Image (cartoon, rainbow, N blue to C red; front, top):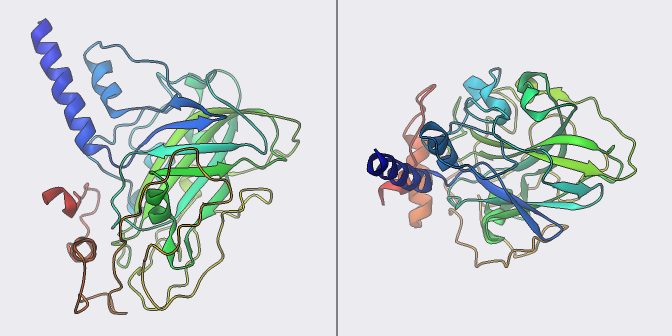
Length: 329
């Protein structure tokens, strides 16, 4: 029995490692790292393994999957597939209002361009009694396309780390932070966007007094929002970050819609308003521009451009996880 459990755990851990390019491994606050929910915790729970204390919400995005626009009115969009606060702790991580939270992602494909967003929702009482459907979310940060570069690509160049400033005026209390990347490489067609929401428990301290009302998770987006149904291969990119209005005192990393004569490119190496502690690594080249129609490859292209184009042409299978083309290389 021991050998069986050991083998199953090893296989599960390997599967989680292979599949986990779209999850938050944890956060750093004041140079202290706190782990999020790891996919191998799911298997450990199934087979009686030890699960260390962590602040991330349980989720069953085990297939390297995402939440699509056809699920925007369903609970999975809130914190990912079958997410719940079970097994998580809410007394491990604190941040002062005005301070920063650094979110650390697993390796992210450079072809999966799109915005990076962060929300907070206040709650009281025991975390395991929280119902995600009742949480009301306030957007405190949203970065899209700026200076010829998508936020997700910038995140890759920052060692897969994204830094968020907590509004100085936000009232102290217990919050669930919802951090998310929306991949838009196939978003030029209906139901093509891919949401990767991640939830973590972080307490906010300080003397702030503002308690924004927020929006329930199933009303954050609609499938036809300008920032959801969007062609990233257009020759003139004017992008609006989706979701409710930004909380007034949020991070300064939010861009204004930008014009560009080319599609996603790495751009400069400028850091966000608050740079992450992690040492930056060299950016991988982002996809080259495709023709404005987005239906054909340019005369010269990189492998990432081809992968992105191939994924966009592959079509959308409603309600099913789509595997990433780079997995086959």
